[in-house]
Amino acid sequence: MSKLIITAAICGAEVTKENNPAVPYTIEEIAREAKSAADAGAAVIHLHVREDDGTPTQSAARFKLAMDAIRKCCPDVIIQPSTGGAVGMSNEERLQPVTLLPEMATLDCGTVNFGKDDIFVNSENTIIAFGQKMIELGVKPEVEVFDKGMIDTAIRLQNKGFIKAPMHFNFVLGVTGGISATLRDVVFMQGSIPAGSTFTVSGMGKAAFQMAAASIVAGGHVRVGFEDNTYLSKGVQAKSNGELVAKAVRIAKELGREIATPAEARAILGLPAR
Ligand code: KMH
Ligand code: ZN
Image (tube, rainbow, N blue to C red; front, top):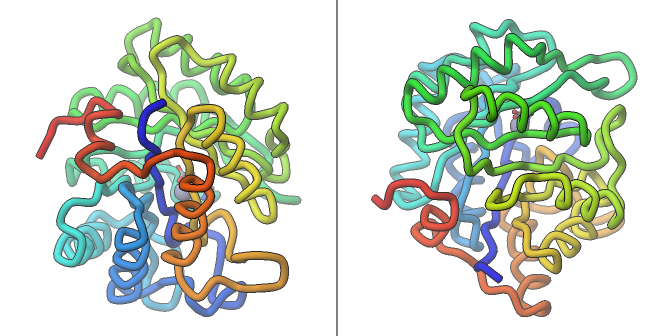
């Protein structure tokens, strides 16, 4: 089994300081949270950015500030901007951070109900346009799938040349409206991706560490962080993303998986060495 890549989704677009006061909004707070996660063992930072008041934005200028600040305190870490942004944003707005030529960016492969009233819209043509842009700019997609049908969409678009193989998936499990977060779901999703693909698992809310453990055992990788879950354990808020990463590291070590450094993560993901 390969070493374990831990991704920290440090900020998200929906979680707020009302959920947990340590959720970062400002550039300084984002850099602080990225450093706490990288110091604890995260090789990848999945990045959303906010205005100082917490409003989600996909502004390239704001992403550049955040990415520069992260690079200053964590020079090795892989930075993976979101192209999902927040529900309701336009495609043009969402795609902005890829113009900064990050090593990776997310590519959401379908539309999903997102909570009770919101719909996260990703039409076929949107996915194609985003996929083509990432190929043109040499940005490796993390293929975000909220349901099994989104894996099938990604495979179909890979066969048409809009996504490069081997694909790296993120199984997002437990969003209200998407696939649930059980061991069966992890096994089903893993069995549905093409040979040679890699995958990580993001369990939402209280499923976060159970799904992390399932992925560690299954040979996948793990995403934790405030975007997905702000609790360290039942009733105990995490003080930082680093605490969430440290818990994933402890689970992995107990289960015999070693943790990948950013350089090792690049090799596993097929990214150029730096
Ligand atoms: N904020 C969600 C609507 C991604 O980063 O690509 C979408 C999301 C996925 O977070
Ligand atoms: Zn995200």
